[in-house]
Amino acid sequence: MPHGGTRSLPGRFQSVDWPRDMIISKTPYRISFFGGGTDYPAWYRRHGGAVLSTTIDKYCYISCRVLPRFFDHKYRVVWSHIENVSSIGEILHPAVREGLRYLGVNGEMGLEIHHQGDLPARAGMGSSSAFAVGLIKVITALKGQMLDKHQLALAAIDFEQNVLKENVGSQDQMATAYGGFNIFRFNRDGSIQAEPITLPPERIRDLERHLVMLYTGTSRLSSEIAGEIICQVSQRQEVLQQMRQMVDRAVDILRGPESIIEFGRLLDRSWHLKRQLADKVSNPAIDRIYRKALESGAVGGKLLGAGGSGFMIFFVPPEKRMQLQQALEGYLQVPFRFEKQGASLIHYSNDD
Image 1 (cartoon, rainbow, N blue to C red):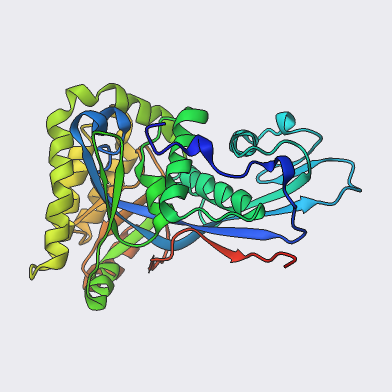
Image 2 (cartoon, one colour):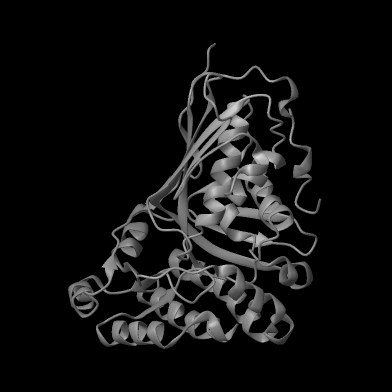
């Protein structure tokens, strides 16, 4: 496989000594600042790409345990539904059903899987990839194997793109697996490199103080919008090249002596470019919110994810934050901090 051969994950389930304890994965959601769109394989395998992103202290949690044999059902999956079924093929949740098959679960033991999230799904925060990363991490941990961050990300990319056949890029899986502030570079040969961005703590705090995130109150399936973007990459070469160049410019701003305000201005220019990628990236409601934010003191901002709806982030001088909050008081504002741990296990014990 082009992403590192994740089909050959070691140790399938044929003869696993199953633990009796519960394992819980904790996977952060991400904010993508610059370079989105250049992480689609249809683009970067021809031109290369790069994305600047960070993860935040809002998480996807997946718990998993072996289901005791005395239950009538073999698999219990709890999400927005509660499923008690006898076989993997009966599971309605597509990522769980196909994920168990992908990871070689063969029905030797029953499983109970619960999903909880701090933020709503389909809202531009990389929730589907956070779920994929968390599911792979918890199932592989259940059988006593620990993938490193890169292996975990590549497995999630392979799973989403080649098994679920989703119109997703390759940045979200990398971001949620690694955690922290990173540039991810997508190479023409299909390889991906992670470059952590090291900044003075005060510079990080300064950036945090200038960011406001709000929820537009809607959610959508991004696959349709992403599919439109993918179909038009050949007609959007100049736009995508400019968006790629903004990644390096943004890092220069953060690492250099320039005012942090320049980061916000660059976000504004990036948003105007992103709107050119596909008709459905924005809409009149999103445009009204963005315009009202600028009128209330924001320097720049963007809609997170592929587009259409979900979460928006704005770059606002701290002294104008209250003014913006009052102007957009009809929308839920979500306080957050950057995080740097990435996907982790918050509970993992075995019988040893």
